[in-house]
Amino acid sequence: MKTITFIGNGNMALSIAKGLKNSYKIEVVGRDRKKLDSFEEKLGLHVKKSLLDNFNIEDKNILLCVKPANVEEVSKKLQGRAEVLYSVLAGTGIQKLKDHFNTSAVVRAMPNLAASVGKSMTTLTGDTAYKEEAQTLFNSIGSTRWLANEKEIDIATALAGSGPAYLALIAESLSDGAVKQGLKREDAMAIMRGLFDGFGELIQEIHPALLKDGVMSPGGTTAAGYAALEKGNVRNACIQAIEEAYKKAVKL
Image 1 (cartoon, rainbow, N blue to C red):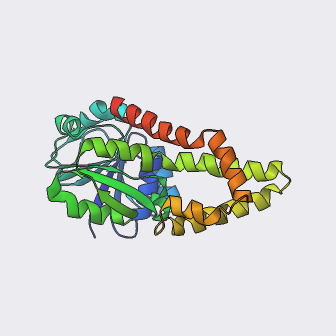
Image 2: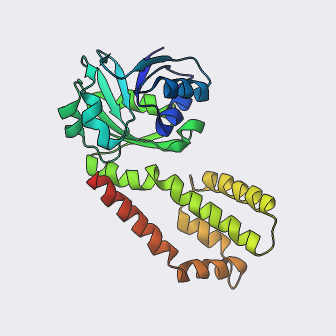
């Protein structure tokens, strides 16, 4: 079983590790022993833990999960040359990673928090020699799509990486709307979860416009609700959300 070495032990690292733990040996590297112990406890699996200072990455498969602002600081603490570095850092380019980390290859990856339940949509780009291996690795936590260049993965970051937050807002808002009209909170939440579960299956095969048309009968309840969403400029707000998140990714 191949070992994946996580550098960083935050929420994203934990989510990915939960998805990988049955297919890979997990090693985690961080600054604080207590936080490493907490990572291991939340993962529910004994892992090899090491402190960051002077950690040797020689011939290791590294999964970099630190904050983009900490790239330079973290890289100075490492020794040796990695076989490949997989980075999940938003907006951190391949050239910058190669400038700071001693590694034979770099692949950028953008998973999302659904990695913890094996449902991440992960976009990838980088050294094509590791394309197949990268897809195998990240297919362990969901599905993958290899993109042609870094501009595309920065756009995909705004869509798939940040997307769970947008959908969470929609889910919460719809539930609040049902509660406002008199539905019990517990019932509203259960119905909303069932809605998202079923919709997730439908959207795999049916274009969104066709799904909408299939539900919206003339003069019906869906048409009334849909008109309210259009009046609230929800469509344009979603488009702007992607644009603003993409701009931020480029600035990081």
